[in-house]
Image (cartoon, rainbow, N blue to C red; front, side):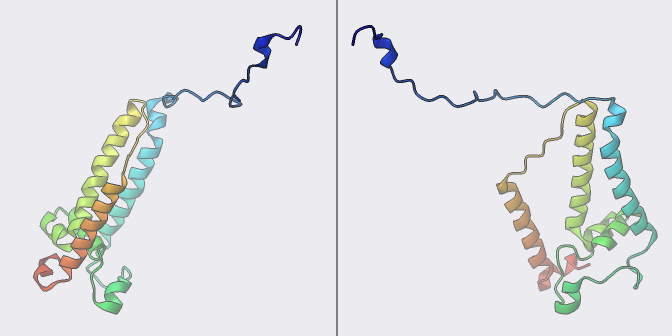
Length: 162
């Protein structure tokens, strides 16, 4: 093999068509802080409107809201039963009644308030909201709601009935 360069016989492993991209940080927020607050403000307006309606139209008076189908057909209180009465009492400042009507809903109201506040702070700072809900947390919330549902339907859990 005359005239052949020995280095030309070397086998080169195949290369991917494109090199992998380096990890990137989220893009910087564009626009003013006021413009970035439009979505959190819209969410707050929708929630406030719903709470205002429930505060104005008493769910304790029959005929204003539909009855829970699970309660109507089985007599079992679901985790949401009493949520409207709880919201009505919460809006009117009767927090003990709100807890009795649906304690899980009161925890959800407070959780929403905290999450919304964190969202607004991050938006103002120009950072995206990242909610990392792992499967363990979801299972924990599901298990707590299941325990809440079972306890409120047992005789000793009567204080949790709406």
